[in-house]
Image 1 (cartoon, rainbow, N blue to C red):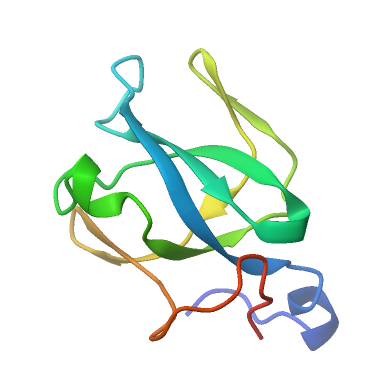
Image 2 (tube, rainbow, N blue to C red; image 1 turned 60 degrees about the vertical axis):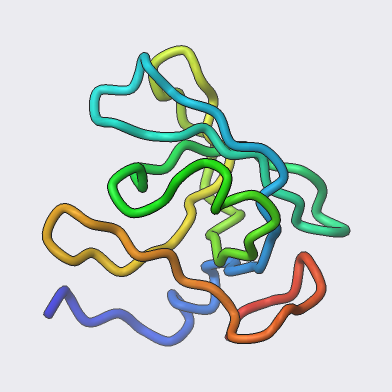
Length: 111
């Protein structure tokens, strides 16, 4: 288990649901990854990269809802500026995306 945090620390993390609008290869990434463009509703469109190429094909990701942290500062990854962090369960080298069981409004909060 990681370090214990206070509940007030947890509520600072802004988790939202978004829909993947675009997926492209990211050949400049150190590890195989895709570049994603995600619609977070009223929060707008954000870009990120995700190391999810082993389990997901680009066409399978389009229009898929995901969960992401949207209030981290932007981070430069190679030639790309990542604006959010898509969440997934890590199983060895595989990342399994977290997503709502049924479709919800883009930008919905996760609690």
